[in-house]
Each structure stands twice: as C-alpha cells, then as structure tokens.
Image (cartoon, rainbow, N blue to C red; front, side, top):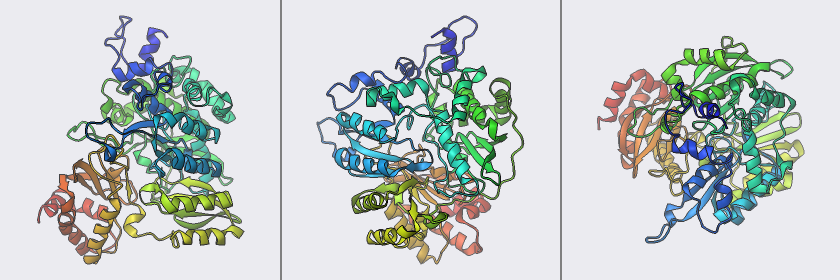
Length: 592
C-alpha cells in the first residue's frame, strides 16, 4: 500500500512532503493493521479466554457483534460476566422462515432465550458466549443470513418500509434497499468474514444483481476509487464512523428518513419501475452529554437523481465522507458534522467536482410524511395477507416467542421487522388467515391493529444490564413509564397520543431526539427531557431539563399537559410546544 493510498483511505493530509503529518489515530491504525478485518480476531477466536482483547473486539464489530458485560450478574471480586450480542444484516427487515427458525433455536440453545427487533429492522441476539460465537454466526450464514457490517465503521443495515405491498412503489423501494446493501458491502472484508465464520466457504458470497455488479466495477474509477485494490470503495481503513442509509416511498416515513446519512425517497412509474429518488444527506442522532459540539441533526435535501444514476450517487456520497470525514476525533466523525461544518452547498459542489458525474435536479414534490406502522391485517396482493404485530421495545421471548415460532413453522411465513420494533407475519394465504388469527388470539393478540395509543409508536433501547454505554434504564422500565403517563393523561382528560422514545444514554439508538417526548439517560434514574419533535418525524426535539429525576416526571409535565389540553383543537403535543416557544415551555416545566 503506497503512502498516497494511506492518505486517501484515512483522510489525513500530506502537506507536500510525502509523509503524513501525524501518526494515525489508534482506531485508524487498528483497522489498517487488521488485514481487512481478520486480525487479531481470527487468532483470538482460537484461544480459551472468555473475552476478546480491545483490538479484537473493535474488529469484531465489523462482523456484526459487540462484546458486553451483564451488569446484573457481576459478582464482587470476580471478572465481568462476558457475553456477546450479535446483530443481523437484513435489508428492509426481511427474515425468511428458515432463518427465523434457526435464530429462534440458536437464541434458546446458545443465547439468553430472547430475540430483539432493533430500530434498524434487524434481530439482535444476546447472551452468546465467546466460545459459541463461531457456531452462531456460521449457522446464520448457512441459513442465508448475515451479520457482516451490521456494526462498525461501515455502511449498516439498509432500511426500507417493511410492508410487502406490491403497489405504489413499495417493491421498487425494497429492491433498491437490497441492492444498496450489496453495493456498499465491503469486498475484501467479505472474504475475511467467510474465513472466520464458515472456514472460507465462498459459496456464501453475496451475489449482487447485474446492475450492482456494474456499479461496483465503477468503484475502481475516478474519485470514488479509494486507491486500495482490495477495498476500492472503502479503502484500507474503511469509514471514519458508522454510515446509515434508508429508502422509502413518498409519504411513508416509517424509516425515520431524516435521521439517516443518506435518505432516499423512491418514485416509481405506473408499471412499478423506479424512476428516480429524492436524496437527503447528513442526518444522525448520536451525541455526548456535556459536549456541545456533538448534537442530533436532521438531513438536508440534496436533490433528485434519475434511477440509472442512483448507485453512482450513493457510492459518491460515501466516498466523499470517506475522504473528508473527521478521522482524528471520533465523536466528530459522522457525516452530519461534515454537512454542519461545510454546508450543503459545499457538499454538493465537492460531490460534483470530484465524485459524481451525473445530474442532480431539484427535489420532486412529496406528499406530507406520515409515521406508518402497518399494524393489523392488510392484503398485499390478491389472495395474500400480512399481519402487523406490536412488540413493545422489540423484545421477543417466552410464550410469545414460542407461539410465533409455531405459527412460522406451521405456515412457513416470512417475517419482516419494522423500524418501530414491531413484527410483520407475511405471505399468509387467504385459506390460512383463520388459523393464523386463531393462533395469535391464543397468544393474547386478538386486536393487533389497536395497541394502547402511547405504546403504539413508543420505542426504547436495550440499555441496562448489557449495553456498556448505558447510564441508566430504558427498555426494562418503558412499560411502567407509559403506564404512568397514560394514567396522567386519563386523569387530565387528554385523549390525544404522544410520541414517546427513551434511551439509557445520549447515543440515540431509539432516536429520542425526534420524539414529542424524549427521555435520555443522564444519571441513575435521571433523564434529560427532550420535547417538541413532530409526530411524523420531521422536526428535532429540544432539550429542556438536563437531569430530571424519574420520580418527578408527572409533576414536571403536568402544567405543560394542562396547557396543551386548554389550547384545544387537534394540535399534537409537539406542535403545541413548537407554537408556545422554548421560553414559555421552560416556564411551565419549572412552575411546580
């Protein structure tokens, strides 16, 4: 690898001397030394230690797994209770029946007995021992699943509307998500992935479409080329930080489009073929407490691109972030900061000057965005149905998990996961509807279309006890928080719903900064209070209280909720807060 290749792949400057001005940051050097994400992971998989070293676990992330410590099971004077969490790569949330059955078996036999639907439409499995990790990931691969690039400094799982509708551009959006997932898959790392988990069996390589193959060939040309022969798009040090892409259709904001690095709104013609996409860039949720230079951000509109240029534009945007993203300071490395610091006009000019040879036009008109959830029964084509099942916090365990397994196994149904952590059972033939409906009723799911209003769109991150970043609780207490809020709303005679999201730390995995009411862990049983996002996920919330004790939730919110009730009309809480203004809201929150 030449010096110029190092410069290109790290974004570090060569000031004309032929040498990089500073040594590589540790995170960058680790990736460069890994032999395309093999080492020291490959070596450490063979030892008998219960945990990986720091170097190995950072490489492990690219393979879709995090090392965790179950804090509930710690014992004084003993080592941490090490375990692995792994996450699937499942574009658009699609999980075929055989893969789900394999995951269910693995979670019971080698995990903690649960599966968890994430906010990026993938299953997570918790509680896997290091010694069992190869069997778990290898089994997933052999069942035609993958965990490659589900984590790490690389493109993550590509989101798309989960509903299997065969009209209104939904098939085109799903196909585009699948193809972008293949397009942005790392080349050399795919070989490393198969070496580690299925002993180099290349029959499990990703098999891209003809259009994706041609686009990947173009990764070796122009500014998109990183200078690395092995990783022509990513370069030998991959991306500065994680990268997220979502595709949807006009009006459907089930994917939280504006929180993505790249958001694509796919327009289709009368035959269902893709015509082109509106493109948004630079969204992101993660931030750090007491670091004002870190913040949540919604994406900027970039323009409209024709269908035959979408792949080249997506590759070009990723390459621009590869070269210009901040590799010195990781908390400043996401593409949202590049957009914030340089501006969308600079971004567009740089894109056209060095990376993208196609044409960007003005955005096409879109209908008003709506948070769609697909709960309940829907016909997606003649004689075929799907049913959306609410899963609060996405956790699937116990009798519900066993019952869904029986349904999937009996009827060979495909599962699709939503960004709202819900689950769709798909491809139900009309003759099967009664049997599926009866089986769901036996599990207590008689009216999947009408969960409690607050719970319908509420989401939470896992937080304690397993997430190493968690400051306090989230998933485990969200049901109680919703119950408390629901009791308060009933007492105040307020019947309108509120979009609630909760996280145990500021990293934003449940996207709390888009909520009408967001609770972000800032201490033990203390939360930042974020308010004012929009019910259709188009506006950021703002922070109003930094360390609100959880026991003070109702008394803190009461004056604000009364103000909302007295305002009357159909205005949502988020819109009411936006209309009041921050000063008036702050006064109400501190008036008790």
